[in-house]
Amino acid sequence: MKSISLSTLKTMKSSREKFAVLTAYDAAFARLSEMAGIEVVLVGDSLGNVSLGYSSTVPVTMEDMLHHTRAVSRSNSKSLIVADMPYMSYANEEQALTNAARLMQTGAQMVKLEGGAWLETTVCKLTERGVPVCGHLGLTPQSVDKLGGYKVQGKGAEDAAKIVRDAECLQDAGADLLVLECVPSSLGAEISARLNIPVIGIGAGPDTDAQVLVIYDILGISPRSPKFAKNFLAETGSILGAMENYAKAVRQGSFPAEEHGFS
Image 1 (cartoon, rainbow, N blue to C red):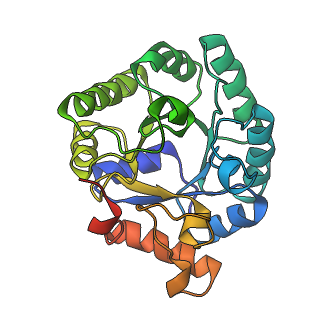
Image 2: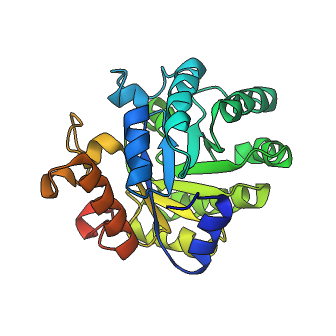
Image 3: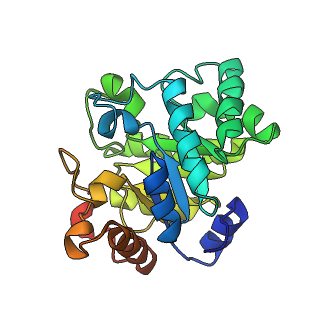
């Protein structure tokens, strides 16, 4: 696999080629992701749930993210590496600039932030200073206490319209990618069609430009498997094979299927 850049991903969107995104939190999975040809590796704050034993992503710290991003970046030089900015690490613009710089200097090539229009100025300032930004809308796990649990977002017309406005706002502010989580498949399709930047879905239907899953979900070793996930290890028998089959299914459009989405 050739090294993946933002230009690569934008070209893939314009040519309607789907790409695969997978989380990794350590050197071993980062290395296998490169071998499997995964275009984007996300060092997600989901590590709080799957690696650190927390019930949510809220307790994850900058030190946690720096530690895991450093491990991943040492072992994968081909995939584009995106790192989550953890809870309250970008509550104001000064915090965002300082903490994004720390992640980029550790090996991330892009940072991901959860939130809508309220992040407009922050995204502008980051991108003006050379920090690529991935937005995250729909179900935003850092806000799980405010949302009242892990619930599908954008089901009503008003809520859906707000997500669309937020998506366009983030793009206009300079975001280069957008993650869209747990929204109706029809909304995932609409936002992907409206935006010029690639949209990465997770529980957002089959019509987004890419898909992302947690590595432990595709291996069937998470304590609870979400509706939008699939155990790819069961059909391959090897971790590398599971990663390769996941990427192939995303690119061919066979994953996600109807049963992995929401109406």
